[in-house]
Length: 367
Ligand code: COA
Image 1 (cartoon, rainbow, N blue to C red):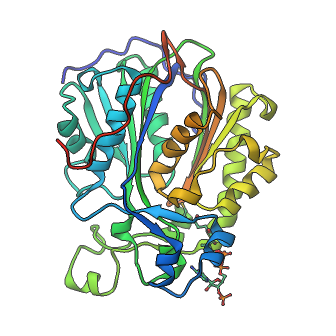
Image 2: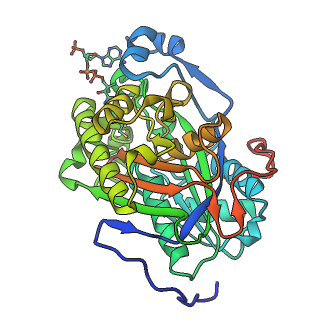
């Protein structure tokens, strides 16, 4: 694609926080596989109980992609849903960023595979990996690229097929995760609307708390790595719990301060859906009511990069989030990574969220 000229002054940055980004989200779409895995079914696979899972996590069921369905397939469905709601065509896209830790394959990027499937020839495409904070990081990057003026229409997709990297004999992790995809369309916004601030953080010192050790250049795929189960997710849940609450709360506070907003003004909090107890602890720590907090973990479990866009779409459909509302997104994940974003929902230059997208396209159909 042609080189794009920078036409706008860069937003002010202090390294981790970005106030006043003139870019916003005009529409969000979602897609999940049809197959449901219930807690009752997990009871037959590992030593666990519906009661334990619900009490300790809030999860009742999760979606599992059928064999042959990869991240790009789910991402295509979410992308079409978002584009339909925005009243846009794939050819309008100039940038596609896919946040995922379970892309179709190491190379090429899932963003390029998705670009080809939806027919978006004018888009620059790349993947971004930041664990479960991937969507927030990617939305921040897309927001900056649009705000700089060299891309006028971007799409951010958060998608995971975590069922492929789950150790189905490990009750400490297999009850938590699920598959799904979400997508948002990012366009220029007028000052005071769209993304108002972003705060992002990382701590590589905590990398061991959540990882998929095998299949990369350190432990390339081999019969031995497969035998040792290195291609599945390993986690220290207890430590992550504490750090997740602390770091998300800090990010929410920082992002609100940078946006010049108070918690009282926030209409809806959209937290990463990892554990209902983490969400409740976050609300308790910052002093935000659960009634205004988007929660759909019961239906989908932890879908990593897909969790925030899935919760966004859910919040819109339930009437918790409408155009002009002030929303705060907050997330944490492998890395460790974490962050928060304050945005005026669905208000950009001449655009509002919502629209006529039918929201559905069958998996595999034309994908
Ligand atoms: N069913 C039944 N018992 C289980 C279980 C399961 N699925 N998983 C663990 N247990 C057991 C443990 O073995 C332990 O037993 P013990 O006391 O005999 O040793 C007991 O339950 C308590 O384990 P613990 O790890 O302390 O539970 P917890 O309350 O911390 O909940 C998590 C575990 C994983 C649900 C919780 O720590 C968590 O959600 N952490 C954050 C993880 C996360 O968000 N990861 C993704 C980051 S994006």
